[in-house]
Amino acid sequence: EGAGGGKGGGKQGRARLTFERKELKDYVPEIAALAFLVLYVANYFYGDSRNRAIAGEWMRYCEGVLHDNFALVGKLEKESACEYRMYCSGRLNCEGVVVIIHTAPRHDLARMLFNMVASSQPREDTVTFEAVMGGSPQTGGGMESFNFAVCAKQDEGALRSENESLESKVLVKKWVTKLNDPLVCLSEEEEVSRELLPSDAVQALNTYSPYVKQLLASPHLQMGLGSDKLQKKKGFRAVFRLSPKLRFGMAAKHLQGKERQPENLQNVCKVAFKYIDVCASYRMSNSAKERMRKVEAQAEMIAFQKTRREREEKAQTRKEERVKREKAAMENMTPEQAAKAEEKLLRKQRKEQVQGKMKIKQK
Image (cartoon, rainbow, N blue to C red; front, side, top):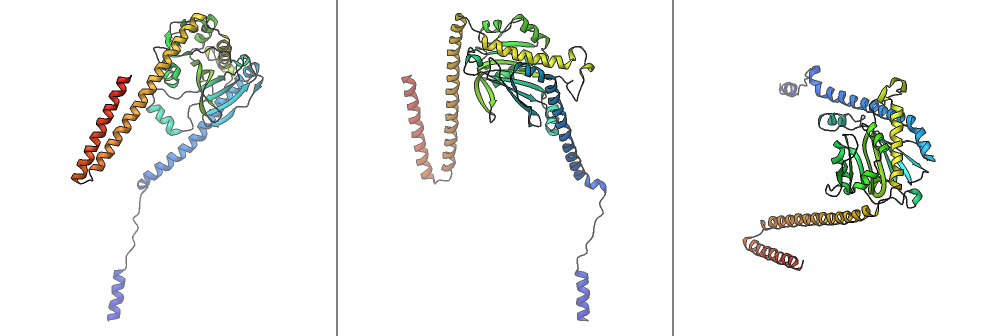
């Protein structure tokens, strides 16, 4: 009986496994995650192929213009899913030109959704020409030291913030020109804006104003050279928007009027190359040079004051952090130790104040 009872007790004590039957709705989170993953991967290949087609179409339309202007035209290389680059050389008035095609991040579904919802200015398709001026007169080494920019009104703030030489609105002014309303001209000197915008240049820029994002000539132009490290060099940059019409193998005969893509793309390339020659060959008058020297002196003073202000702010931040650490350490001390540490801290602060006053008197 005892054995039988033990056997029965063992059966009753065994755990009984039960499986709850789940319905399809219980797997909604997993299904949604899998669907988003599949959609993301599919969109990556679709967006990458669209961007590749846009870059290929631009190259097909503009390769002839590049060969007309340069002795050596490189191959368009893919840097990422939304960036293509090529290098051209063998031309007067510049050492070489880097051509960069930036496309919208169509391959990145998350970024595209974010740009649609949160960004006030969605990413555009653009082509950039960065001309590096060399050391000899034949390669643009004789280019004068001036800043000159033409950009759309909505891009002025970004252009100034990205280039230190244009940051000051007091020194680099907006000049009245014959450019159409969407475009503005920036420079330190009125003569520069007048001489670099002759009537034929104004007509070309007005005709293609929807394409113009920025033209910038500067002795301290920031550009990505070699390992993408930003360097400041004397040079010229032109950035143009690509029309939404530039898509898979779109034939010119399907385009009407202002949307005739090949002619427009080729002509904006010619505008960029023409401005390389204009900027390299322009010579300022003696009176303009004298005014520019004063502007440069003001710019150096502003830069010095900005650097000193930043240094003082960093020193003040470090001081506040040190005081916080010392006070936190005092909380773990005995009352006698805390009193001594506080007295020492007060003596140190008074000493720093006296030294600061002495420095002010010396100035």
